[in-house]
Length: 111
Image (cartoon, rainbow, N blue to C red; front, side, top):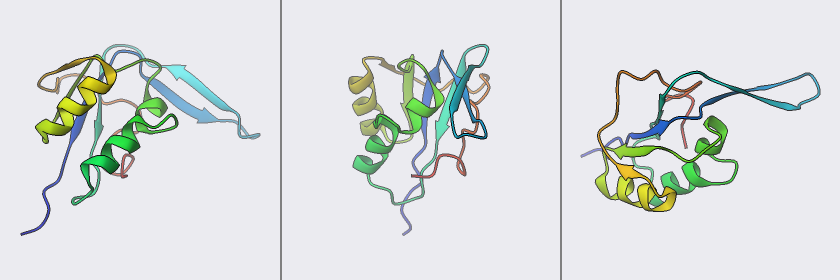
């Protein structure tokens, strides 16, 4: 049986769009509204690797937001609990009506 796909949803109240100028300097532009950043690593990726990729100082979350997540949800309840404990936020169901953060999704968030 193939490994199951894990999906992580993070409530993003401080989403940003990251761009780079011709000199490689990074610009972070705030995006309006509440958003849901979705991370969908390849099937079979370990929980430890997913956690590290999201929480690293230059990781997925730091790239997409300027503050801690408002909430987390995941198809892996243990991972959701771990991320919530790390960020000090609640675990809850994702809010699918919120727009995705810039570049979020399976292709952009492979770990």
